[in-house]
Length: 200
Image (cartoon, rainbow, N blue to C red; front, side, top):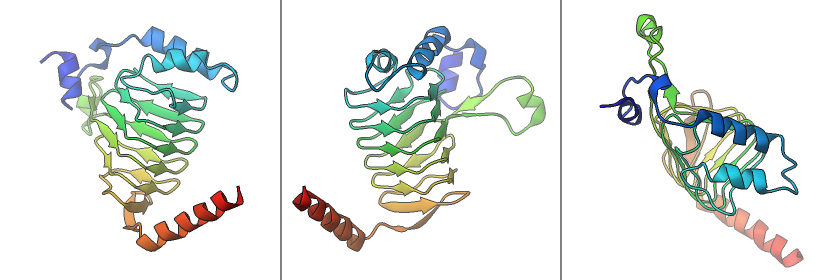
């Protein structure tokens, strides 16, 4: 296995010997983060070209940070508020209609527990997968190897260390499922939407 293969397989690898155009992604990130994004879409469009997948309706609000870009895949109608950080040493995949509140961090990289091995500078990386129709609250941290299912709400300030099943409301440190999202809740919010639509 070469270093990139080890990296993508979740094995120890040397981060200084892997693929990636760090200089280019840093330049594009600076240009986007310094941009007047509300009327100049060019810096975001240039940044989108570095991602594994992005769409015309992908919205990122500066500041945004990632390490590589090519390991990130955004589904349709993705929205991230300010301060999203993605350390994409492995794949980070978002489904459709994902909403990210301010100051969310998604980490794929980890370091050995053993201090002597950690001191070598080797690390590992595990993919993060986030389903469709997910809302992630502010200041959430998502750790390496986590999968979040479809139709999930993650409460603000949570630290997600384990998988979260679909149709769940989850929160806490560590993040745990509080309950399943109920039919009554769906009916309530659809009623609220119907009222809004009628008023407009």
